[in-house]
Every structure is written in C-alpha cells, then in structure tokens.
Length: 282
Image (cartoon, rainbow, N blue to C red):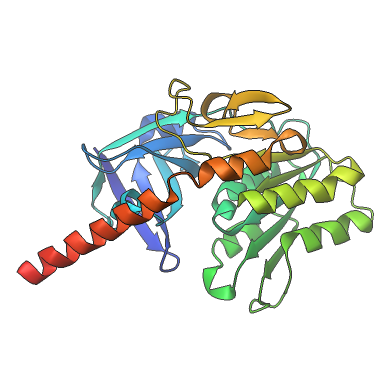
C-alpha cells in the first residue's frame, strides 16, 4: 500500500496526489511514468511522474478523471492509500547537451512538461515554456512553471487568462523572430503535438513528443501501446514515451486512442450510478 500524503484538486477534473513511494522516488527521472492500481481489483493506469523527491521518498502524479479508474483515484484524499504503484517505467528523457529549449504543454500535458522543464532549468539550460489551456479556470502549475523557466507564456483558447491563442501561434512567432532552439519538447493532446511538429519542421528544429497510448502492462509484453515511428512499430512503454515527433504517425495514434472510448464512458456511468444507489440506500 502507498500512502497519500497530499491531495490537491486543481479543477473539477484534474487532481494532484503526492504519495509515499521511496523506491520509485529514488530512481525516477523526467519523462518516466508509473503504473497505478487503485485497489486489488482495479485496472492498471499509466501516469507520468509529475515530480519526485528522493530525499522524502515521495512522487507526485497529476491526472484527469476521464473514466471509472481515474474517478476512483480522484476520490482518494490525504491519508488514503493506493494499492499498487509500479515504476519508474519508460526511457528517461534525453536532455543532456540541450542549451536552449522551448517546452510546449497543452492542458494536462503541462503536468508532464513541468518535470522536463524543471530538469533542464536545473542543468543550466535556457528554458522557455508555452502552456495552453481552454480557459483560465483550467490553468494549473502556473507558478511552478514560472519558477523553472526564463520565459513563460500561458495562453487560452478564449483569452480569459490574458493571452488568447494556440500554443502553435506563440511557438511560430518565436521561430519567425529567430529563436534558435536546440529542441522543442511538446506534450499534450495528439492533435496539438501533431501541429507543433508541423510548425517546427520547416525550421528543422528537433522536436520530441511524449506519447501516451492505450497501455496495459507497461513492460512491452501486451503490445497495446504500439505506435508507428518512422514506419517502424515501437512500444511507448519500453521504447518511449519520448519519440521524434517528425516521425510519429499521429493519425494512426489518434485512431487507436479512441477504440475504447464508448466502453470507458459506459464504465464511468455505471460507477456513478452504483455510487448514487449506495448513497440512496443509506
């Protein structure tokens, strides 16, 4: 069992949990993830490590409640326990040698972008962060991202946070102004990452994306997390999750990610209905 030492809700769907997991914290590196199981009968959920502290033995996960399992995880509070946390898994991000980087995060992807930026900033690199959200009520980690960047731009689709536009608008303006990035790291919805890559390709800027496909075991055995990169099949759990964005088949990845959407929604609805039944029975 893994004890929750801190729980914070950012908005109605996004929550942050800090958990005591000393063995994971001792080895965790930016870009890696854990497989979480809420209870002994639950499914495995792949969640990127948003932060870790080897000294205290704690890891932080930030997730969005989109299905039954993440809703169950979101119901946990400080003092609660998680049955299983396995990790760290995946290949750590290759950040060595990067001197000037633009880290682009979209929505929940900012939880994954943050540890990348934090590590680069700590290594002495010049870090710029572009974070995009639908509206101001969904913005999170703003102060944390500001603390690990030389320039932070937070934009929203509706302009409710002061800067209206897409992350690609901000990135393109920087590139057109002559920004010489060693790399762009993009993490967020597949469509966002696809268009970030289309934006950087004419400028020949190496672009890394973090892929989060359907995953079951996290060890490469099930084959569910396969993605096509440069015409070759890769497994996100053991070959990634970071890949060369200019080589990823985003259209195929998008099709695969929606295969079980109807089942996920039904499972969540059943979970809500059973919860309401228990409430009325009390």
